[in-house]
Image 1 (cartoon, helix red, strand yellow):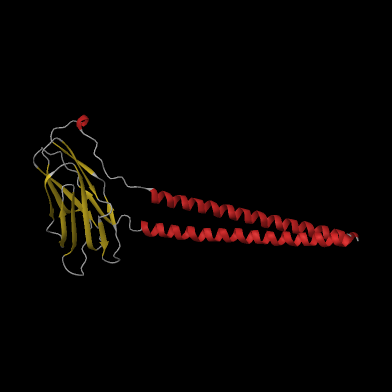
Image 2 (cartoon, helix red, strand yellow):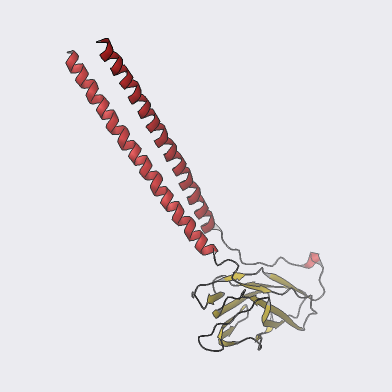
Length: 254
């Protein structure tokens, strides 16, 4: 009878050891996988962020202008010495304007590839003047002027189109554009109370938030898995040492 009990205890201990070993391996594996995913995610974020601060494009602050006169808004570009081989620029307009047009700075070594002028937007595609020779600037340089006429009293809103404004690097063919802030041009005789709020394009931060949530969850998973693995390993070692001491005591007593 005693022999059967000892065999049952022995089997139970072996089973517990086996299950504890499997649990530790699973937890360590989950922690390892979470670490790899988190490292890759951060590497991707750094790769995307490496182009932040590349070619900077922005509107020059101008105005106010009298109504029914030509309004000219300069657009400045600073490539920060990065060579470009293509620049697509689209400007969206909030408000009814007339005689809409673009004038490119003739001093830059660029040429026009495409141009589309509509009531609510202008699009222009520029490339290098000489084939296979990129062009760059090392400070805010006037790229072009956006011209229009507004015959009322109010504001005209201007913004860079987030999807169609692209600056491609000659070295890597990557999009390195960084867009400046939207601007409102005051025209005519208006007071602050008369200025209607101008709707501007809202950029969703959903993707960034999801990435941050994923990173946070992975970090929590790594910490939790590591803590559980450490706790179970410590408990397993402690119990084994206690059992060995008890076995030694029993053998000495026998």
